[in-house]
Amino acid sequence: IEDLTGIHETTDFPVGVAIDSREIVGGAAELLTRHFNQITPENHMKPEAWYDDEGTFRPHDQALAMMDFARDNDLRVYGHVLVWHSQTPDWFFQDAAGQPLTTSAAHQQLLRERLRTHIFAVAESLSQRYGKFGSATNPLHAFDAVNEVVSDSGEYADGLRRSEWYRILGESFIDLTFSYADEAFNDVHAVEGTDPVALFINDYNTEQSGKLARYRALVQRLIARGVPIDGVGHQFHVSLATPVSSLEAALEAFANLPVTQAVTELDVTTGTPVTQAKLIDQAYYYRDAFRIFRAHSDHLLAVTVWGLTDGRSWRSGNGAPLLFDDSLRAKPAYHGAVDGKLPA
Ligand code: G3I
Image 1 (spheres, rainbow, N blue to C red):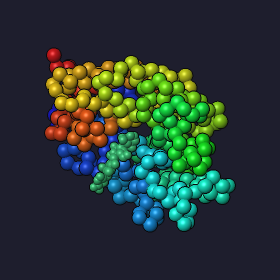
Image 2: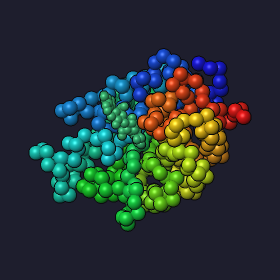
Image 3: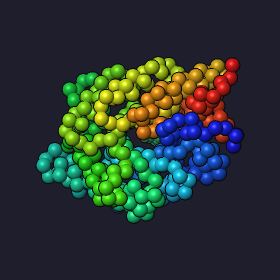
Image 4: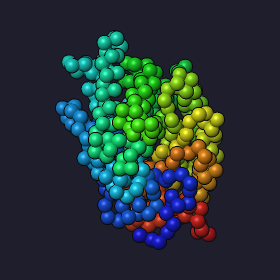
C-alpha cells in the first residue's frame, strides 16, 4: 500500500466506501482502513439478504462479518437499506396463496406488519450481537430507511415511484418506515437517551433539476408531518459530462431544511475507452466535487464512494469510475479527491 494521506484525514466528515466481504481481508482491507473511516455494505443489508429461501429471517453472515470488521477497525457502518422496491423477497407483497396483495384494509395491515417485523428483526439482530445502538461496541451510525422512492418522471402529482410498496400503502409506507425504524434503532434497541442511528432517505439523479424538485417536495412533506427523518442522501452516480455545479445545487436545495445530508454512492464514469486524458479530467472532477463537499461539511454526515477499486464497480463497463485501480494503486482521481498534487 502506497504511503499516502488517508482520504478521511483531508475532510472533517467521515469518508465511506461501499464494500462486500471481499474487501475485509488482505490488501484491499489495508487500503480501505488507510483511506476510509466508514463502510456501507453494498448488498448484504438489503431486504432479501436477511431471509432464507423459506422466508425465515436469519442474521446474514456477510453483513455480520462487515460489522465485525468495522467494530475491530474503528469504522462507522452506514446501513443500506431497510425498504426498497428492488432486491426484496416477492412474498412481502403476496398473500398466503402467492397472489398479489390488494389494497384491502386487511392486506394493508398485513404489509404494515411485515414492514415493522422486518425493521425490528434487523435492529434486534444487530443489537443482540453488537450491543445497543449508541454503545461503543456497535458501529452502526446511519441507515438508508427508504431508497429510490421518487419517480423518474414528472407525470405524478406526488412525484413518487409506483412500486409495490406504493401500490398497496400509498405514500404512508415512507412515514411508517421512518417511524418503525426510529422506534427500533433509536428507542427500543438504543442506549437510553441517545438517538444514535441517523435515518436517511436516499435517491439517485438528485443532481437533475426535475428529480431534485420532486425529492425536495417529498422531504418537505415528511418534515411537515413530523416524520422522524434525519438525513437526505444523494447517490451521485455521475459522469464527466455531469456539471459538477449540479452536485452543489443538489446539496444547496436542502441546506435550509432541518435535515443533515450525505453523499451516499459517489462514482464518476469516464466513458470508454479509458484514456490517460480522461483519467486526468476525472481527477479534476473529484477535486472539484470534494471541494464542494468540504464547503458543505456543516450539513454533511458523510461522503461515500460506491466501491473501492475500479474493477469491482457496478459501472466498470462505463469506464473506470473510482479512486483506486485494480492493483490497489491510487489513481489521479485519488489525488484530486484529497486535493493533492495532480499530474500536469
Ligand atoms: O451474488 C450473486 C452471485 O452468486 C451470482 O453468481 C451473480 C450472477 O449474476 O450475481 C451475484 O449477485 C449480484 C450482486 O450484485 C452481487 O455482486 C447481482 O446479480 C447484482 O444484481 C447485484 O448488483 C447490485 C445492484 O445494486 C442490484 O440492484 C450491485 O452490486 C450494487 O452496487 C447495486 O447498488 C445499487 C444501490 O443498492 C442503490 N443505488 C444504485 C446502486 C447501483 O445500482
